[in-house]
Length: 165
Image 1 (cartoon, helix red, strand yellow):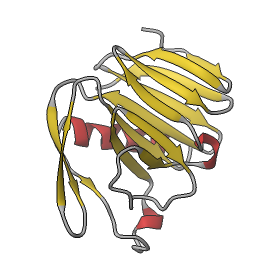
Image 2: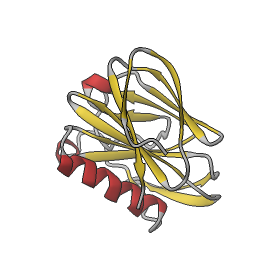
Image 3: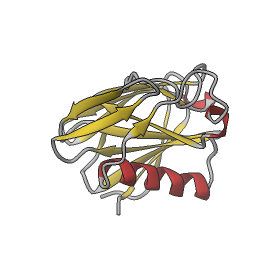
């Protein structure tokens, strides 16, 4: 495993990713963490009105977005992904205009494909193919591939693979 950083411009990039690794994608104003699900499992998405059960495969991705690029945010992303993947915590979706939305420091999505958008409200989207993120990562598409992650778009990203403990 290469633990070094790689700077990537705006293109498609295949990045190897095993189930015991986390991929960090950094811009100047935020960071995203990506892990593989690792097994077939059910995930619960809790909304104000409903509970949605989502089946995910071993290659599906858990993606968490943080709104600054510092050590505390990186730790919070690792914790969030561990809570979802390893402890089975549900994803919580807030109603639109909920006062807590602006206080969320990390938000997450799960699935085969996630597009990062900076023009949506944090934590309010039960759709798992979009994720609120910082402006520097807007439009980045993160797609599951066998033993890898495909990144499309993004400008001057720094990519790091690390052990996921």
